[in-house]
Image 1 (cartoon, helix red, strand yellow):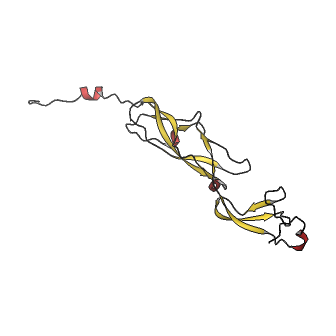
Image 2 (tube, helix red, strand yellow):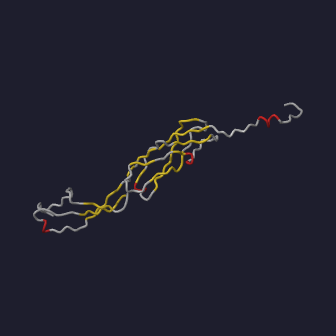
Image 3 (cartoon, helix red, strand yellow):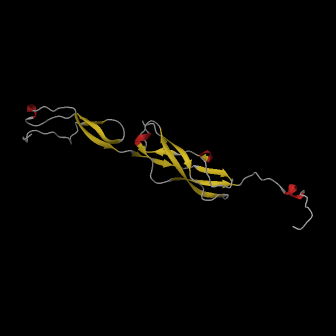
Length: 171
């Protein structure tokens, strides 16, 4: 078009873009609602729909572990388990119409096998739900406070040791 009397104003209000599918690259964008304006607009025909490509990045979510703790009874190991989690891991910044949730897949090991409190364990999370692929978890590790409590399974072996017959000889 070599005329200054014809305009295709994409920065004006009367246009809409519809992007096919969810997050990804090279997504088809269909632009609708375009109009020609200007003195010579009647001499031209705008072919519609207009399409182009665009990228939709995954939406980052926030993760809250307020009130989440991991507790186990002393077993001599540093292993932690998802069955020892109390509280609820929750997501933030999810679009209300989307079906996205989070689950704890595994829990990192304790730094020590000793009875104690204020350990920090890493929660390995996974997004679930039909819209989960449109979201991404934080890059930083998500951690929870953990503790190891004393075991109450103590066996008294003193009586059995007293009944041992000691043989003749030098020990």
